[in-house]
Amino acid sequence: MCDAPIPYTEEDDVSSLGTFEEPKKISSKEEAVRYAYGLSQTRKEIEELTAIAEAEKEKWLKKIEEVEEWYKSVIEPLKRKENYLETMLSLWHQEQYYNASEKQKKNLMSIKLPYGITLKSRAQQPVFEITDEEAYRKYAEEHGLLKDPTPPEPKWNEAKKRLVVKEDGTIIDSETGEVITWVRAVPQDRKFEVT
Image (cartoon, rainbow, N blue to C red; front, side, top):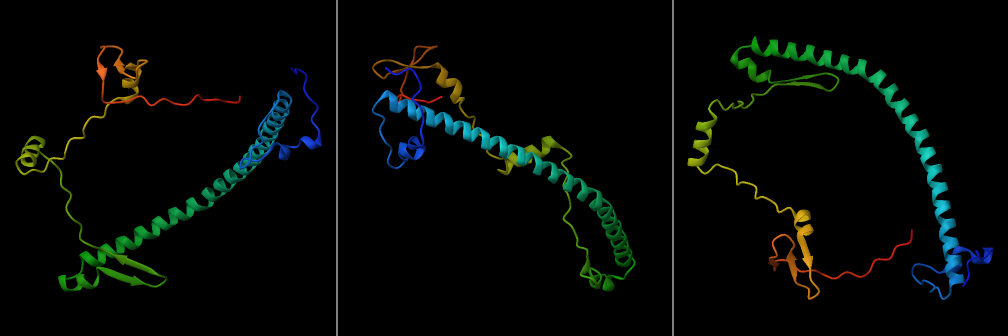
């Protein structure tokens, strides 16, 4: 039995411990101690690199925040100007359209201007507002226009809590004693963890 740590040397590098494709089997506690040391060192290195990465991300996030603030300060006035110019052109287009004869209106549905700007107008479908909910529902029922109701979903997590597996594999509802046949218990391998 070995309780004292075995010194770690360069020959004991992680690469000598095997690879995931061809793992080296641990055959003694001394080897297990070397693996534990390797795992400990690897975790420390991961922690150090994670700290460095987080610090770098924090710097870049601050820089991104500065850029976003700058962008917001320069884009907002331009967006207001864009909105103003669009509004003025739209109002002018409306005036042209509504003051034109029926024959002229066809030519004013779309106006091409220089600089890649086009003014367009089109008729829109009416928006329907239900004024009598009861009559609307009755109409939908009579004409088969009701949506299918969403079927309720079983509460699986709550159901699992009530299920007990007996030694013979039978599953019983712990609250009612009922034998449950609509599910089977699949045995699982023991779980091993390294913490």
